[in-house]
Length: 306
Ligand SMILES: Cc1cc2nc3c(=O)[nH]c(=O)nc-3n(C[C@H](O)[C@H](O)[C@H](O)COP(=O)(O)O)c2cc1C
Image (tube, rainbow, N blue to C red; front, side, top):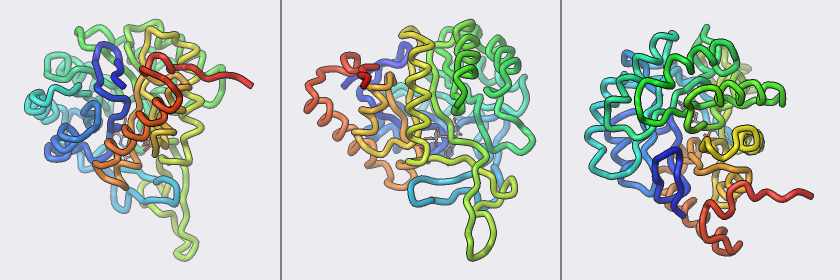
């Protein structure tokens, strides 16, 4: 079940998603030693951040709502951690965030000269008060991609928010194709959603008056559609990480049919712990076998129509 994202070879189809139990060295080491096919690191900013006020993460019956606000150790620490994790011989994926447009080229350039294998640039964080999601502003996204896509040889990918309108898919796909972008990761959590505690008559989380990113099972079908539409618009030259609501090998197989080269697991990792990677990988292998598929490439994008 080997696969490839840009030039990085993954030993299996399933890895972790940025932001879940991947902030500190010990957490990243646990991912390195697990069945996750890659080590995806927390999105990082120029300086360390403690993130938004608590409560900022709440489990829901089929997923979670959160407004973490990018708590992270600052990019220099992730460069140091990548050097330590190199010995595991697993692709290391940096995730870059920024609070201003200049932050992105600064951090990308630094990761270009580090031990990471791929650089995922987060254009879709919904939880920074007063900062719009860059990938929803097409001019800003175009400009930002121009500033980061030719700073070195390591492949650059972008983490996208969900899109809903076919005209918007087309617009952002055209922008992606006009820059040196090797992979996309879709989708980030669905931004600005609300969960309410009816007894307390309050939202479940505190930041942004209760608005937060929705993840888990609630968003799987949005994520599947995003993968499928981007696969059609981007062709096969650009790799796709599918992410959003994956909880089983069957979910992963559905993302494969939609066109994903590999998948990432977030909310289920938070709930189930490190064992989820082995379980989902085993379930994925078993459904591939039952369906008679010998490789990921054989089934990728194989969705049939009614
Ligand atoms: C607690 C939490 C923190 C997250 N932090 C980040 C982050 O730092 N960078 C990022 O690109 N995505 C972040 N995400 C989004 C996830 O990587 C993923 O795209 C989203 O949760 C959907 O996948 P899931 O349904 O498997 O959780 C975060 C999600 C959660 C739940």
